Amino acid sequence: MKLVSRICLVCCLLAATAHRLPAPIQEIPENPTPAPIERKSKRTLNAKESMSDKAPAKKAASMTDQEVRVILSENTRMSLMHLRTYVETGEKIPFAPKSDVRPDEILERLRQVLLSRFRSVSILNGSSIRQPGSGLVMVFDLQAHVGMTSGEKNTVSIIGTFKDASGKPIQTITAAGSTTVPYPAWRTHFPEAFSAALSEFSQKLVNYRQ
Image (cartoon, rainbow, N blue to C red; front, side, top):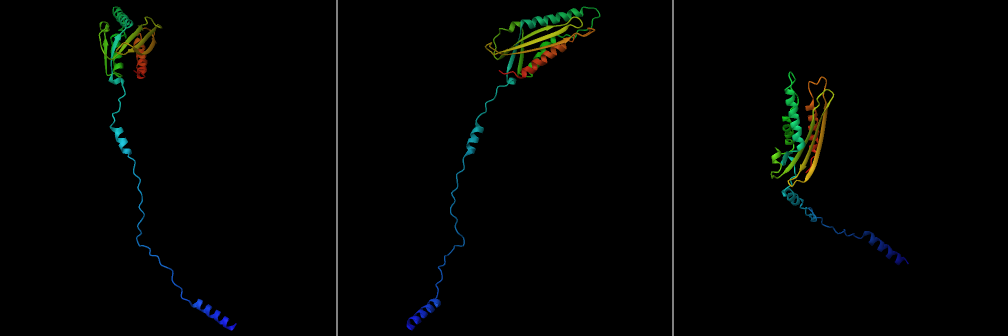
């Protein structure tokens, strides 16, 4: 029994004093090589943008690029003749003040309004109505009445009918103006009535679409 005890004691002492082997050492590189990163290819958006830049832009049709020929209607010719007769009659009256009605300025003022919207404006006389031509045509219809006495109305009506080269109506613009002959009737105030109608016509012309 003592022998077994001694053997066990010796085994315990040997186990306690046994030399322990060190754990294996792993070498860590000083500058580890990073894993290659896969780079994603960039989308070639610039190519599409450059193609869109090179594509010619379509130019929108503008009134300033168009020509218009103005044809006077029968009402217009009769109204202008009536206004000229009115002025000539007043000039024959002794000591009468000079009339403020100026028929010869009507067509020129119309031309200026149209020139602010169109590249070129030509006003044709009656014999030129059937002459061939290309481009836009406007039939100008004017009806005017001048008051003779105080309190009477001066009235102006303007109608502009636009037609294409084939004569097909495209759009019609209407305008009107009126004033009252003052007391005393030294002036008719007819020019103010025409100016009101022409101003309305000009404003509506801004919304013109071919």
